[in-house]
Image (tube, rainbow, N blue to C red; front, top):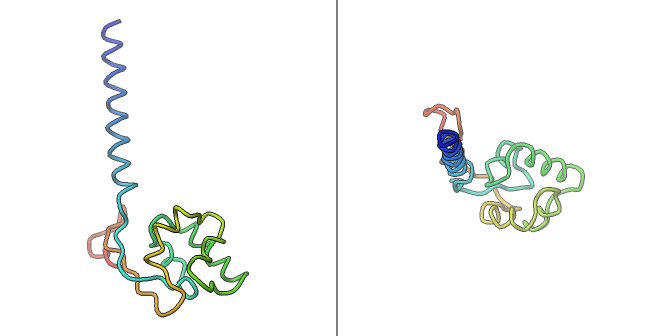
Length: 118
């Protein structure tokens, strides 16, 4: 019985350590520089925004295609999946005027060192 408890405790500890390590990787601050013009940017550029990713970037482009350009940056909250919390993460990186200048300064999993900057 005592060895079963030790084994169980070891397994729980391994899961906790794994979760913490995964959380640090997944939930670490996204490091980006520049701005994304949500009226002209391509999906891959929009996907660089903190918490957006490829699927939501596609939704943003589809919304823009079907409804016309965003008038103000807050209009991006009209896209399903972009709420107040997500907007707070991206608001400093989005614009409705000018060029898209966003660059990722963080390596994506599986990306080679020489491909670091997009």
